[in-house]
Every structure is written in structure tokens, then in C-alpha cells.
Image 1: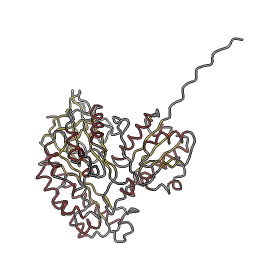
Image 2: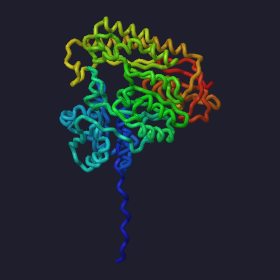
Image 3: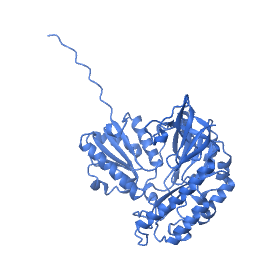
Image 4: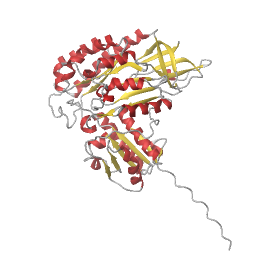
Amino acid sequence: MKSHPSPPIAPAKPLSVGFVSLGCAKNLVDSQVMAGVLLSEHISLAASPETADIILINTCAFIADARNEATEAILRACRHKAAGGCRAVIVAGCMAQRYRDRLRQTFPDVDAFLGVDELERVGEIVRRVAAGEREVMAVGGLPGKLFQPRLPELRFSGGPFAYLKIAEGCNHVCAFCAIPAIRGRFRSRTIPALVAEARTLLASGVRELNLISQDSTSYGRDLKTPAQAGGLPELLRALDRLEGDFWIRVLYGYPSLVTDDLLEMLAHARHVCPYLDLPIQHSHPAILRGMRRADTLRAVADLPGRLRRAVPGIVLRTTCLVGFPGETETHFQQLLDTVAAARFDHLGVFVYSPEEGTAAHGRSDAPPKRIAAERRDRLLRLQRSIVDERRRALAGSTAQALLLRRAASGGESAELTEIKLGATVAWVARLPRQAPEVDGITRLTGVPATAQPGQFLAVRLTGGRGYDLTARPV
């Protein structure tokens, strides 16, 4: 009998993981770090969570709204698994870190939980749940690690920009915030590590580096080496020496820690945008003391004037918190008056969320939710009038725009539908005054058809709508 060779055995299909990354840009960086670990360990990334073998949800637990969003995403993934759509669900990040002792009971269908200090164990955890292991708990105590991405050029930002996480954790003791208990003490990455990562990102096509941490103005204060003694300004000097055409933007600062040296960098550096994001939270002394932010009292009072004198044309973003325990209508009116006088370029508003483990938790003198929401809306209406005034004043001025993507048909709005005008098309772009995700976009028409994402164009502003601007090439 003639024997026939056995057909070759097809190699096993590699495991795939699909990410759902929730919360802030700092969380997005953690997702990128985990994705780099997986790829370096020969585990692939799925095009979408729905097509993945394993769904990984990187969660936020900062306030109630974030937890609700995470809960919905987790339950949706678990239903997908129950219907045979994937093999396992992993919950990572702040929610896993903060509620490790409760999550097994809350989400019995989740296969593994991964804390914020265990990012580099993600490959191990994926392989364990893929092999059928359940109820895996990889969550440690108070975090203390820093992570250097294995594949720094890998990014989930969806454009020619990246977030460069310069530090982790927080040393402030704000009475409303649970971040120090979730993320640990403030710890800075070194300047050489950050410069190396920035160089790789720029070589991969990034044209905007957004520096992020829980408090970027504290960068380097925990490091005692001579090379780090200059803190954030020293880091900016090192990054500014890199060659190429790109922007650097500083996000998430603390009002009382803005030094003259930092302002000097913002005014004169080649690549640093004259832009600062400095959450004031409130302006009334009684509320700031209750928030345990009394050290910002003097800074908040003179902040816009001091910064605008030092850096003409600086763009200021801030965040306010309304409905904090003890806030009266008088306190809130003072905040309204402060914002009206300050004329911040961009402003976000949160309603107070009572958080376990914080100093303000359990206080019974918080305004009713209805009143707090009404105050948020009043503050946003005031800010909208400031934004409208600013937009009208900007019409006719020129600026540099970073091209992000063509305005594809069916995109954000009818105005973003691709407009073909001979050899030109419409684009979505960003100006130095606009941070990713939070400050609106600039819609460009008349862009040459040969333009590419990551290209800079000189533009003249023509108007806009709401928080978005419109412009044409000069």
C-alpha cells in the first residue's frame, strides 16, 4: 500500500486582543504600553474589540460618570463573550486598582483584573485566560512603578500627535480627588528616557508632543540628580533641542507651581506652544480651603494677568468644580465673576462627585445635585459667550495649522463633509491654541490636494461655529 505524506499542520492563529480604552489621555498611554507588551510577546492586536479573542477594557474610576461608563463597557463585553463573540474579558486600570476587593462579586463574568502597576504582566494574563483560567487577580498595593514603552512609536491617538507621559501619581491632597490613592505618589520619568521616546515618536511621523501627568508642573521635584534639578523647564529645554518641525504642549499643571523659568520657556522656545492647562477648580477662598487647595489662593487671583504679561498671546485652559460641599450661591457668584474677568480661552466644568477615601466624602453640606448641575450650566453659558467673543476677535488673524485628517463624508457634521474644489479638499486641523480632544478643531477648506497628515500650513482664520474654528490657507 502506497503511503501518502500527511498534510502540513497549519500554524496556530496568534491570540488577538481588542482594546477599549476609557478615561483620560494618561489612560490611553497605559493602553499603548500594554499593546506594546503584547506585540513584543507575539500576541496580536485586533482591528476592533468585536473581532478579538480577548477584550481588554482599560477603565477610569475618577468620578461616578467614569465608573458608569466603565460598568457599561464591561457588561457589554461580558454579554459579547456569553454570546460566543470572544474567549475572555480582562478589566484593567483605575477601576480594577481602586475596587479590587469588590469586582469579582460585581462582575462575576470577568476573567481577570489587572492593576495599574501590572501593565507589563498583560501578556502573561492574556495567555492564562486564553488557556481557560478564570478569576485571575493581578492587582497590587499602592502603585509605585514607571513604565518605559517597549514600542514607543505605537500610538492610539489616531493622528500625527502623541501623548508623552512624563510622570505618574500625585502628591497633592485635594479633598475631592481619589487619584493619589489609586495611582500612588508622584514620580517622574528621567529626561534621557523622555527625550529618547520623543525622538522615536518624531521619527515615526508625530508632529505634536503633548506632555501629560497628573501635575506636569511638579515634574522633576522628586528627582534629586543635578540633571533633573531644573524640573519641567529643564525637560522642555532638552525636548526643544530636538531637530525637526513639531510642537510641544504642556497639559495638566498646578496654578501655584508655574515658575518664571517655565514662562520663559513658553515665551521663547522654538517648539513649545504658548499654551497652559491649569485647573483652578474654584476661586473663592473658603471653597479652596475646603478643597485643600489653599496654596493656590494667591496664584488663582493673579493667574491670567501674570501669565499674559510674561507670555503675550498665551492660551489658557482651566477646569472648575462646582457643587463642592459648603458652596453657596455667594461662593459660586464669586467664581462666575472670576471667570468673567479672567477670560480663559478654554474652560471645562465638573459637578462634584463624592468619592470614597477622600477628605470631603461624607460631608452633608453639598448643594443638591440639581443646584450643582444648574451652576455648571450657568458657568458653561458664560464661557460660551467668552468663546464666541474670542472667535470673532480671531477672524482675519493668521496661525500655523497642523493637518490631522481629510474631512471624510459622513464625519462629525455636514460642514466636515469633504469639499472638492478643483485641486483642493477640506481638512480637519488643529492650531497651537487647541489641545487634542478638549478644545475643538479647525476646519480648513482650500487645502492643496497633495497635502498629507502631519503637514503644517499657514492659515487665515475666517470664523467658526461653537468651539470650532474655520480657516483657509494664506
